[in-house]
Length: 460
Ligand code: UD1
Ligand code: CA
Image (tube, rainbow, N blue to C red):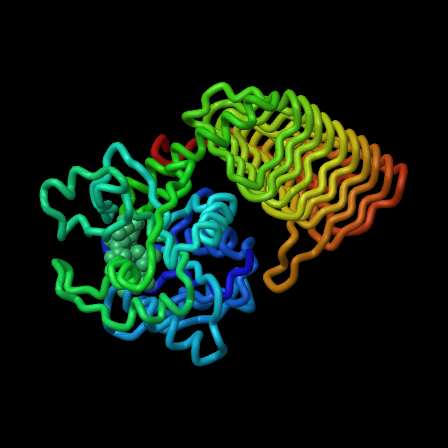
């Protein structure tokens, strides 16, 4: 199975999204539509992977290049239609080199298009010997899609768009998914004479099948999984497909030993990894490359983005991004972890704690209302409530080092850069500006003044 080229259509505006952003750059489960389709198509290793752009061309091509640096960008001209998109692509690709064998074409508004379906389609096409094969699916509600019209013997005759269809055609439930495999030579011929005599005044790629039919045979391959080929045209479809996909992801994890109390309010992206006996409580979002270890409990109302949470840890009502939470750590409620934190085993952060680029040693606790940023804390240290590391002098971010077995009193202020040794005790309300040696006690003055008999102005 060798694909000479794959052409991804991404030139449309996606008017029905009512967005300032091109449709293909909308996100589905954490990745853009275009990223997802390019990844699936890329797995078939076509000799050339082309993406056709036009609407906000710079933005779309920049995104395409960021997903695959070797992508071939085709600029569609001002003439609209999926057929025009392929005409522009073929003009460019055949100029660059000789196309031979199979060419895959796919729309980019199908976020769940997967490489397994695509491989089956290509294999079916190559075995059938047909000149063109369209990927179809059967839908309970085919509204909006092009309908597959077959003759009495079941051969594909043509595809009729919703807006051009008569009543009996509208009743057909088998639809065009906008994924095709063509023999390269046949494709070049089939798109040569398209016209725009239709309800939308566009050059339809679907019309190429009628020409293809006069030169060879056209086959149809039904996608085994209708979800995998569902197109998204508006935000209602985006929500519905996201929900259906998320349900499947949750079911996969539940069948693999994860307790998800409420899959309706738990959102898990595709690259997340969950160990056995993890519990995910309602209102949780597990995003990016998040990895959660055995028996950990996440949620309720927790967002994890690219977070590593080790076994036995608890993360409750918090947001953790780009951070590593050690075994049996206790995070939250209401802890905000910005990227770069490294927390050891049996540590604690929260309630109401913010951390950034903090390295926290085993057994160290930051229990209440603190900000710890750009800091190194040793092991078995305890940070008093309301303590702040003043890490920013207006120009530079500076680090605070606090040793092991340190008892920081409530309401301390560490003015970085500053270093505190091991086994230190600090007084409540201290402002620590200078190095503190091991095995010492430190406190800073803040004189208490009493004004006797004082009354507020309104009482005087
Ligand atoms: C298209 C098909 C329809 C099919 C449906 C499946 C045609 C004429 N119709 O309709 O049979 O059932 O997809 O979802 O092909 N695009 C371009 N250049 C353009 C116009 C569109 O590259 O000038 C791209 C879009 O970015 C999109 C894809 O082609 O990725 C499909 O365009 P869209 O407008 O969504 O087509 P549909 O009306 O859904
Ligand atoms: Ca579409």
